Length: 456
Image (cartoon, rainbow, N blue to C red):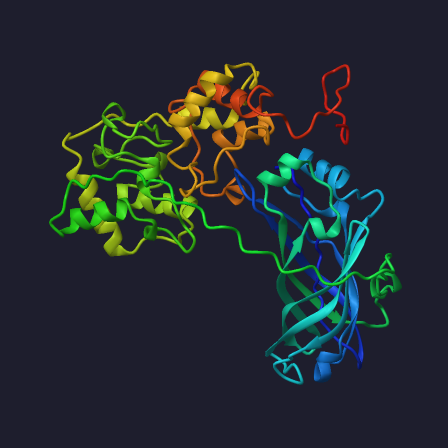
């Protein structure tokens, strides 16, 4: 998954047009997404340059360019960024991604009114990695006031059509294209605008290839057997409705696949029939606790609301949902009181890195991965399937123990209480050992054992 990031993109922002005056990039962000076998790869840059000739009253005649320096794109993992620059995009030879804007077709209106938006199809070229192709994609332009134009849109960049080299295993394990999403604001050029800022970036490749063919839709995957559910309550009363919520993806927000049951069982671990160990403690007897989330919630439903926001793409529970979940959790809490949870192990797990993460037993790690990870990481479930050989050991440890909220992709962390260090070490060894699968990169190492960037 060092993939890269193709930043490609740059994209674009453009938009715009030709006539009355020149507009220059004021602020913006270009984001890319590449499907990955563990998490999708996300990257971005806010260092977008470019200038446009545009008349808001005749914006369809737009022309200009937008460019991004490849070296400014970040994915959140330094080594992966280095691989992107050196192995894939070869930024030392091809330092920029450049979008040229030639015209806008199918404009929804002739002029862009102040406070209004227009849509159209942008026609131009996109250059990256020494290849320049024609591109066409939808764009939306908003005239926020008399002095700024905001352009937003997205398009796909197939890697093969831009001659971006990738190891064959990486090609098979990752998606074969990047989705570029952009949101860039342009302001009118003034006498104070530095010439370097106002300059239109010219393409470096003269040959323009035809537009890349539209990618074929991926084949439909055979759905995997779902987690086996056994309902305790079927009467239709609040506790029954709460149990259905416990098993429902709809408890979260749009695009959510996670349920409470993926992380918490309704009984003790020893009684779980599917053989999986969840990241969270059992929900049984949870209503007897006095505090949750180390004091951030005072009843189990409010604790569930925190989970919903953190891991289920939601924005909070309704009052009815909280009441039904509380009724269910109280119904599976026969004990009048339970000991307070020790949260120190959670914090300790997040703060301490695993020593010698590849010093475990790969064969045992595969068995443990089946037990700890396949609640979510089977094809058709919440997370993508495993792909040994694509990961860096320290990154896997951080992904399992703790990842910053803004980087998280619906995966709750496993504490040392749920997944001991020795077992995590075996899992990491399985995922990263050459005995499991050939590694994507075979970097040369210095005498100190530090990988040499760009070596293979």
